[in-house]
Length: 350
Ligand code: NAD
Ligand code: ZN
Image 1 (tube, protein in one colour):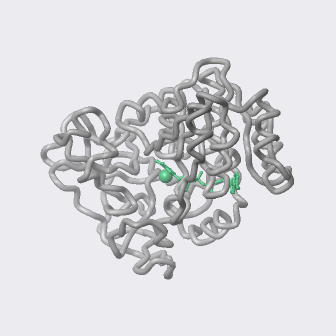
Image 2 (image 1 turned 45 degrees about the horizontal axis):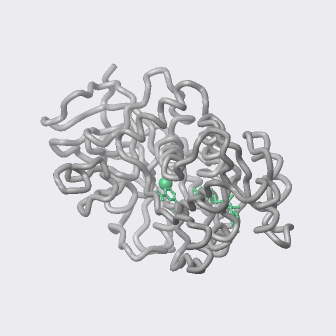
């Protein structure tokens, strides 16, 4: 079961925001007493990794940084205080690498909101490397028979959209709009939503993404590159507006439109994080329609195990394209251009 651990490994590292993404040899990290050492086999590429590299957000990253927070692999080592894991277990690296577990937020299971949250691929070297460390409490437990490449996107995209759908407070038969439906989070959101019994209208750009989101289970599609009145088109498709909206696009404009098309009493969930954006809602309409606007930030350990359970039962299946770790710069380029359908997953051996 156990494998020998090399001294060095391949990783993609950057020193400056927007600077060179270097594919190079770096030392294999040593796990701290509370950490696992995971041989990362596959890592999804999330739009968050692109934001981190560009420096889009008002929260600095560590530098130099190894990005990545959808790492699926095998436990090959661990610190002395780790309990409940063994060498050879399948483990996942999530955005939330570790939290304090004692603050008022951790106490109530809101671990992502912990002020001391340690973030994979942001404040802690992430999964764009062959060997990565993760806090043993927060590391995700991936079922032994799982396909690790398929499991990788569940660790951020899957958990995040599953939690966002719970945050939308919907019931079976309700309409949910997924804005950004053809991307990594969106393509999983459609599938979680249909598995949870909701009806889906997807918004994204282009006919290709339209066919794609319908294949994944959306009943209706609105093409933001063609449709002149998106608000009316969404209301028409849902007979008066969706009961909930999951905003996973990276567009301020799209987020603000969702305030206008959501059904009275509906819930607008903010997930996508376009740089420097503001959500603006007319007070009159918000009151008279009695809508809610809620932020949703990844998920806790329970959300993670529930999201993985849907995956394990075959209810969600992220459409992935596998390329080598060294090809990360090309993936970022496609992502920036909005050309990715589903998720790109990096094979760390190439
Ligand atoms: P992605 O690039 O794979 O998908 C974004 C999709 O939005 C693309 O398909 C794109 O064509 C579409 N889009 C662009 N403009 C649009 C518009 N005007 N209307 C509708 N769709 C539009 O990105 P992703 O990996 O799915 O991530 C999406 C966002 O979610 C990023 O900002 C990321 O940082 C954020 N995110 C947030 C959390 C959280 O916890 N809140 C977790 C993970 C990711
Ligand atoms: Zn992510």
